[in-house]
Image 1: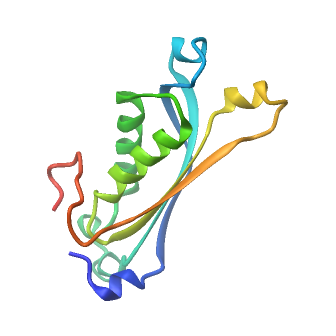
Image 2: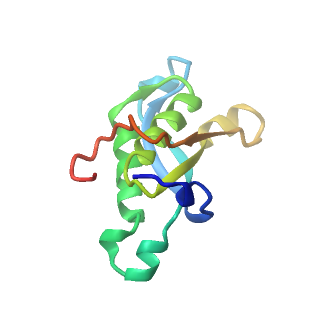
Length: 141
């Protein structure tokens, strides 16, 4: 359950440079095979229970965050980076009740070759609601 003190929390878990593979793109040639996408995932919440207990089960396990993002990417086909980032953010947000905000930034290295070496990155930010979150993880409250 999210309480008011959780909403004001500024504890963060940051995963940088997570390599995902998925079918993504608007052009036919892009959709012919899975591509490499790099993701940064930032979770914000109140992690004080984990800090006090020093018990992994009280924490947001970054290994689970990475595994879930990898699963979401690999299970779908996406046309837009925005869609991939949104799906990852929504799933990760539902992992643990202490997380109140998730920001996911994604970058497709293959696209930089097409746009003259520039890096085009999409970032989405999603906030938890007090109820109605869905999650793929059935073993989490």
